[in-house]
Image 1 (cartoon, rainbow, N blue to C red):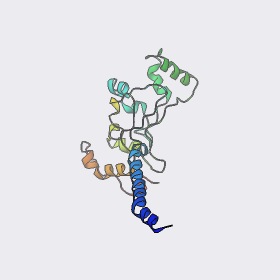
Image 2: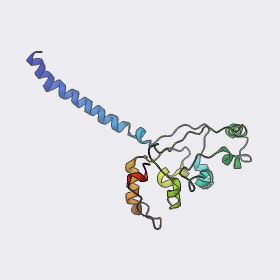
Image 3: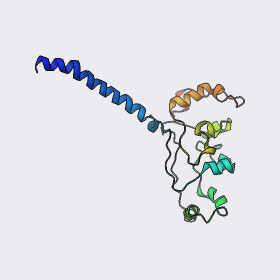
Image 4: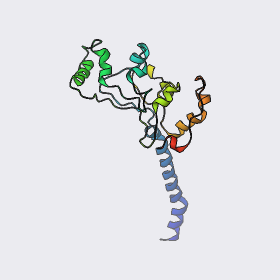
Length: 189
């Protein structure tokens, strides 16, 4: 290599390559953040289901459908027999309800697509939070106003720790609320 080319490469090309690589890394990090954190995740469901209608207008309590929320670690995607409690009578002639009824009659699980999912390496117990008086909306957003549900908050360790550390301030309306545990074992078992 000649000295002029090496000088040119070190003074001009290398800084440009470094800047472009760094800018691409930063841009990729910020552009893909919502996808990594799950914020905005809104899969198309097999049939349109409106939480705005059911939980909002009709004022059906979240735990009517998500029966595990106050009793177990998982809130659970509702089984079809919960839907059929009403839809054996209500709107039973609508094409989507007919399709759902077919799944029910055949004993098949309906292919709902899960929206909110804690990573497998983290432990979360819905019942502990629900039984302390923490509302579903605290983590899931104003679900009763959503025609189509999407993930409103990220499920990162930082978000969980922020709430655990600042619970008395963030959840001031809940009597007797205290800070949550911050030790590793509380969430990583």
